[in-house]
Amino acid sequence: MGVAENLAAVRRRVEAACERAGRDPGEVRLLPVSKTFGPEMIKQAYDAGIRIVGENRVQELVAKAGRLEQLDDLRWALIGHLQSNKARQAAAVADEFQALDSIKVAAALDRRLDELDRSLDVFIQVNSSAEPQKFGLAPDAVQEFAWQLEPYGTLRVRGLMTLAVFSDDEEAVRACFERMRALQQQLRDSGAPGGFEELSMGMSGDFELAIEHGATTVRIGQAIFGERPGPG
Image (cartoon, rainbow, N blue to C red; front, side, top):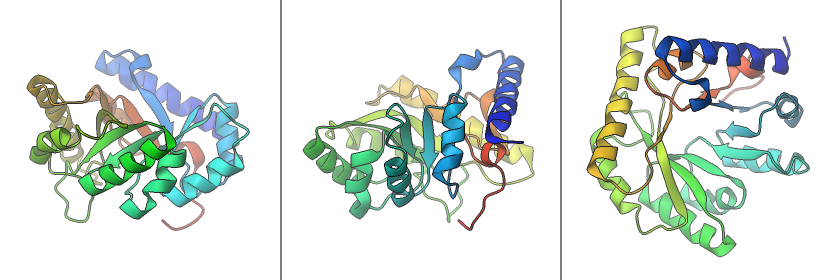
């Protein structure tokens, strides 16, 4: 199947998951992740109605945005780890950054965004599985981090992002999503600065479970674009 057919199939699965969870499908945003796929595949998604695309690496995002600049209503979400020395590139092109877990990076982005007279929607990345190889803050560190972000006026905190444990054990995956939903509620109740309406969680293998636990953005790559053509 092509990209348009895959998108239609994923949308049907999103709607079915929402129905099971008693949720409105309009509450769940589909974020196609085009990592390693070329601009022509993104154009197919655009033609099928997609208006925001996720990329893991800032260099890849910048290159593809340049190739597709004629699509002036296509927005870009950077969803992977960012080093502070790449903040200039991200600030110039990204419309969203979903992997914020460092004050150093926040300060670098804020400085570059201020120079460009831009602002940026950001999600705080949480390591919900406590895996040492993963980026993201421990859940109990997020509230303090949110307060530390308050001086950076160009950054609009929209919510939280996580990658659940990669496992066939559904209960282990479910525990990550439950942890995120509880953290979201805790942040709302505490009055932490920023908006915590968004929960970006769930990928091709687990997005239906994420929707059942309150995901508002699901990041889908393989189920839309197919097997990745290269490493990484």
